[in-house]
Length: 201
Image 1 (tube, rainbow, N blue to C red):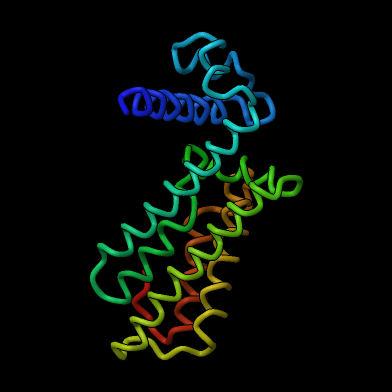
Image 2: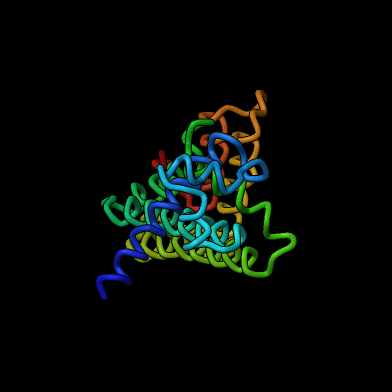
């Protein structure tokens, strides 16, 4: 049991080191020695726990996906009214900026999905959870009489996720024509039209 806990802790250490290395160098430029340096261990120690870099990259993708979603869900859950929950969902769905480490790694790792069914499954799972999160907020708003929905719940929820994903990609790609406040306004304005609620920001 102790050995298992120790191994789990070391793997978590290596995952966090890989996250930092990806942020500094970009996923395609990260090597085992970079992760070892970040973790303060030898390359051999990394290879002991992760004989294949691809396995470590998968665990990084899984970890960052879970962290991103858990932060969103916890923030939405802590908000009071349906309007505040919707505002919280929008706020946490967009990168905070170029220095948003979780968002940076998340977009980097999504690039693996086109040639890996395992990575594609992580993307699909995140998308489904995000749509469900918005769906829950919309249902709460409708049930409490705060929202008058213009379209089916899932359609609105899926559109909100698509908007934040597309705008988020531009924000993380250093597109100077897209600023965060403007991006947030676009998502919020769609939410307002879809819910009939003016106080979503």
